Image 1 (spheres, rainbow, N blue to C red):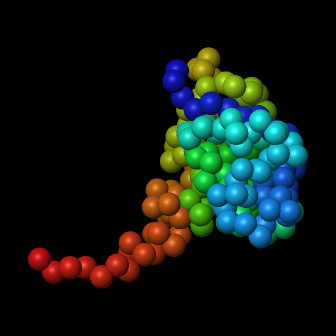
Image 2: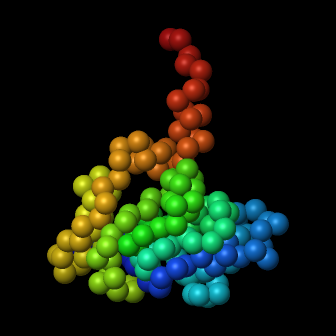
Length: 164
């Protein structure tokens, strides 16, 4: 399986670890360079587009800063998979085009493992073929992710059409 490489994190990863307060006066490009540096100093320099974060429960707790989701998206993270997410982080992530998968059995997934996922069907497939159930993502949220977030989706929807 080619799949997505896994970065493994624990439970209750807060938004301050994702977007450290000391860097909030900068743009997302700088904030992203410091994403998770207090928990995984190797993350921001080592993550590659298409990698996934697999974490424990309550991912994204803490403040409502949208830069937490923006930093992960800026780094090219394809999805975050966890048993549960903080409500505000969940909404911010989809608004910014970051896919989240709620997967109660994701604790079995290991660091560096290669996985595949189908957000519409609600499955996460491990390299050994084991299929874990995840909550299927509703079509309107998938469309938002595919558009790159809520604003790009709205811009596309309300873009004036050129008559031909």
